[in-house]
Length: 373
Image (tube, rainbow, N blue to C red):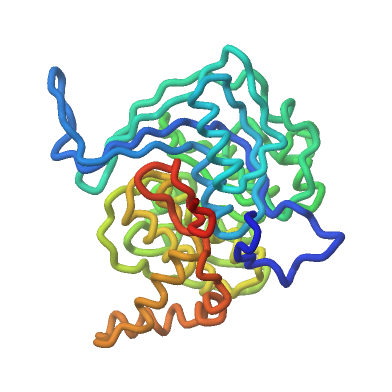
């Protein structure tokens, strides 16, 4: 974290607590994002894009999202020895303040690359890459003490008593909260084995389609209840409909609608939502506030192009809230926003003028405006 950056967990820090807030592991891609396409290219044609940006992607989307929100983030990932890897490493470590002490560089292993084409509010992607030269748990060993980890289920970092060597399992046994996410199952079998791993997790944050498929339910609400029987913090996101959650550790249940926005690119919005929920949970916020904050941050992300480029920082959050709060002509919708997000008044007054903001154009520009030369 850069000197003078806003620290939302400052009141919780003590000399014996973990130095890391969030520990992550996964694949870092170089993302090349084309924006403003009039249409998707078809065979034998060329389409000119109005804009283009480059940034670290994959697990870097989540690492940058958590770091921009002021969480001390450490990432373990494989990096090659090419210029793409130099760019991603430098951006994460120097610009975005992500600790890479558990990451490694490998000779003759080239960086995975994704080309994302944004058009009509959605995107298509083309990716090339190879598996990491070394399994994550072998590369990490014993992970550093951390307040939380985020894992994908099902995945190579299995949780449970039989998986002593898994880095995620070691972190859990060392006191870390385990936040779990899940992707779309390309086989569409939606195996129940994934749900069995939730007994070792503290939170699960699927989207509505995934939640209903895995739980064999017909509505997001029924899926939420089914998941809440398996994990302390159950969250189901539902796009423009918002998000719902049950926290059995506090006895809270909440449903929050999403702010109205014009979505340009959904890439990375789920990572931003997850990062926001991790922050709110570690900070001990009420569930209603956690959901509202995560929904607002995700809505800020989808209004911009490009995964980690679009992840908001506290400067963006403060700008948005001041705009909502200070709007002169307030209809019923904006009055509802003011009521729903009034808790931000207790947070953003202490955000410094130079607070971290999202990157623009390409991520080679500093995200923290206080550091711009």
